[in-house]
Length: 327
Image 1 (cartoon, rainbow, N blue to C red):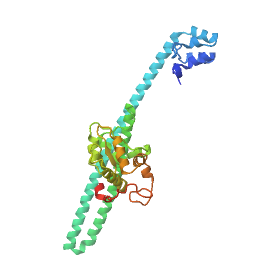
Image 2: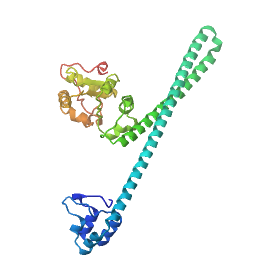
Image 3: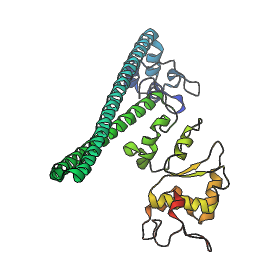
Image 4: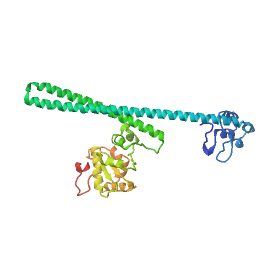
């Protein structure tokens, strides 16, 4: 806490030292830049609450010109540090942008080489097929060429995967650094083009570490379009057909069986209570079990991945879930 900080009831360290009768502390705080003119919330100054005459005398005779000079120096230092921090942030943002650009180029190079390797492998396979029809003596050579091409494809596939992971982590670092500068509302801001890394791949395990299901807020509606055409179990909360208990049950069962994201699109309306109600219609207690991840924590031999009897079995006289309906 600095000499100008105000705590409970607007009281500064100088106020408390004067009230407690600590003469040496008062003198030290004044030399460090404490302002004796600062009022507490009750309208009193350190001089007015001084419990010793010696403390009140020091406060009365203190040269306020020294305080003004120290305050100006402190403000100049604060501005200098703020400018230094801003330069550092700009340099860091520039460095991260350059890193992302370089890694993007490396990823493109890796994918280009991988594509060429696939072309070469297909050429070798075609060459072997022609040799089997025309020149049996070269089959061993063409078979070895295919094996060499397959090894090259495997190596380049691993390199491309590594380059993609490094690029995703660099983009994550840049997003978090940019968000830290802007000091916006809590949560992670990202472009729609980054949703695959943020939601589908969870680069950096940010969602897993948070422990809560992600809530995507996007006034443009592009995120909803992106998720609708991804390999997800998509439920449109505005569509009554989508909110039928059996439709929700199949979507949730598909998510549990195949590990695909379950998406509830609430549009611009607060339909969360309606979604909870329909989850409860599928199985009592399902909504809190899903929201708390308790449904995922359970284990067992049931087809939907929960312990004991499966809570997502169809109602009586209803057909069991079909895997193709869950896609």
